[in-house]
Length: 365
Image 1 (tube, helix red, strand yellow):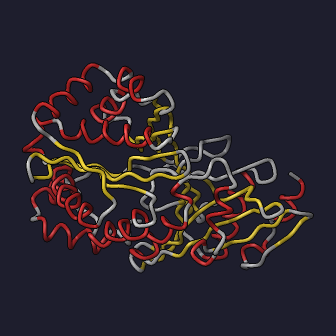
Image 2 (cartoon, helix red, strand yellow):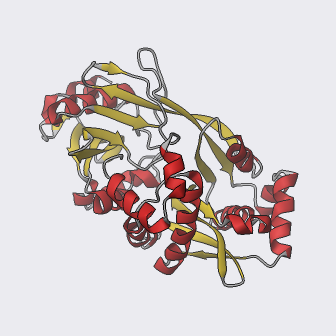
Image 3 (tube, helix red, strand yellow):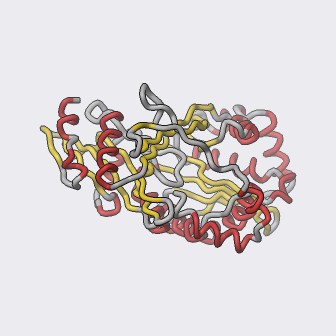
């Protein structure tokens, strides 16, 4: 405790390494750290979203600047707060940990407690002129209210296929059998061709939700830098040659995470989404992974929460925090997924919606 407190000084914000006994802390860019993967693996709570592969996707697509506060003890990673600096001429400069990520909690230890990591990132943000700093997956505490509240779902994969199937709700088992009986087939692939097929479904789904899709470049970078590095897969359901449902999953260590899902509503009766999720669960259990994370859900989205619970997902609280530099305190926020603009985007032709997504998401990160 004492060592890390002493090492967290303004020198970090100036981009200099600071040392105290065997503990050192500095701000790094993981894309320029040849041993990043090795060091990250040394912390038991590390995830795909702390990886250089995910940082590369965000940097290559949106040109965000990595700012990863890293604490090492004798070359072992004992603390990390991963953030990206978003610099937009329209929405200003801020730090986000991390953009387009459901949760990327700090990696902490006795030598690097969460409070010290947050304090030093705020000091760094002051030096960079940030409007605010947002951390996703950090719980509220005294003097630090949650800015947003969501829920997540996790599934223990260690019981084996039979136990996993028996753990499904009757509704999920029925839907899986219905899809199989209808001749729906599922493929697991890391190819860009599979990503293109998924992206077509993604555009349909985003329009249905009244939101612009992210650019294909974003998903192309996921295919190239994440899937291409063996860190994830696209799982596609087809009825004949037609893609009817799909999802993008990432994995790291013994953990898998469901990141994006989409479907063709005209084929909803074939229950492709259910078969995609079940095949992904089986796939990762068969690969020896131990934990399956279903990603973020809004508490108000009871349909999505029920879908995840039907696969055995155990619900947990997922909170964000936001430090406002103008007021000098943590503040509450509001989820802006829903609004008047949903109606406009539902009416927008897909090509125009794609252009809108390409134009605005960099500024809304």
